[in-house]
Image 1 (cartoon, rainbow, N blue to C red):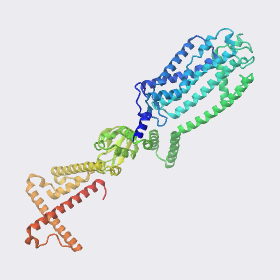
Image 2 (image 1 turned 60 degrees about the vertical axis):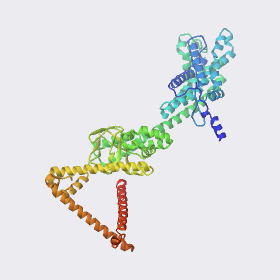
Image 3 (image 1 turned 90 degrees about the vertical axis):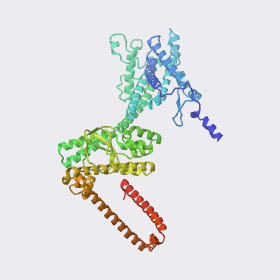
Image 4 (image 1 turned 60 degrees about the horizontal axis):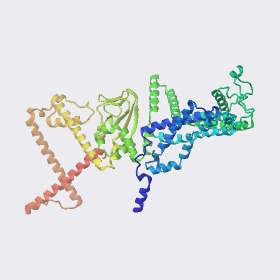
Length: 613
């Protein structure tokens, strides 16, 4: 036990949290990461151009570079205090010594080298003959060490990836675009840097035509254009060459002149062809994957058009069908959501389910349901879409479902229903015909699950099952009372003209027949003048029912006794010989019959609530 405890406390997650450690998901860290990404973009673009085509001077660009270096120095300091993800499980580690050791063993050296001010070397030796030495030109390459900062982009993107909603298909296309532009840009800078480092008598720069300067007499053929042609125009010429090389076009107006340039161009063509082919293949794959939903839509619409053409439907119906399928394919599919929920952990699944399904708060029963029951119902939920003005329910429809509005507007019982509203809740407690209508106002997406699914789910939650049965019994009792009240009111007010056969509910008509048996066809027994006659009828009916039930029960008992060949409980001699024993046995039999009657009543109620015979 002590060994296990020691091992647990040695794990980084259980070590003391550093008071100065920063959560990388904080809002200010998100903003700082965005600023850092912009600075990395500046470094990737400006540094190669500065090394290849520009000389280092104390100008505005020099001080901008020092400001960028300062920002990256601040980022290095912050990295010592930012929590890092555990490589094994991805959880954030807030143990300060662990963070420091991880950074020192990892990217610290490269980050420090990337902020060293190599520009100062060029400024110190930027005078006369010293600045023309080839070794100092080679030392300019040290400024390219700043490009090591770009490796930070992967670390920053990992932090930003979970903070924002990202369309990964679009992201892949952006990545390929950035890759193409970056490779072309760096190849152009390398092409210009090669001419500067080699400093040959004949190179591509001296034989590249800059017409505006040649026509003005500022530049002669074979003359080095540096110092005459602006660096930006020389860079554009190099970029023009690199774009031609990568795209395998090659106009042939910028040519290599030395051995080193020919070797470089050969390697550049092979590299450019590889990058070009890779990007074309990858982009095609991304576009085909990204358009799967669109292709599915086109295929379905083609099949629909063929079906409509074969069926020769009216033009108006064709338009409605196309609008319906177009709407259905434009929204999210419930099966996709269900597949995602199945891949989540139980805790995440419960949190997502409760936040998505606001209908839970609209139904009294589900407010008290355990989370597991709600998740089980949600995982088996179905979806149906209705076009505008289509009937969802009409009076007399048999319904055993509860509906939830996911999207759109509907009307039920003269109430406007929007996202999150529910209707037909009573059908979960008691299935049957509905006496009201519901229809869609706009396109409506409805979630629904039926009573059978709820009863099957309640099998694993006995406490909630008893609670649901109690609510169902209350609902049945409420409906029976309302049906009886309708029949009573109709018979009392209309008498012989009372007719409840138009109601979708059959129970009022049933009670009306019962009341007419007891109180007459015109309901005279319900009025004051019929009280005596009504009481006499009730007494007669009670006596007849009691005698008939008693006689029937005795016949059944005698038949059972004869069948089993046993002696009855009450012998005719016991009452005379031992009245006390007779009374005791009578009480026992009464208790037994009461228990049996209650058991049979309970079974009947259960069968009514569960729908089982």
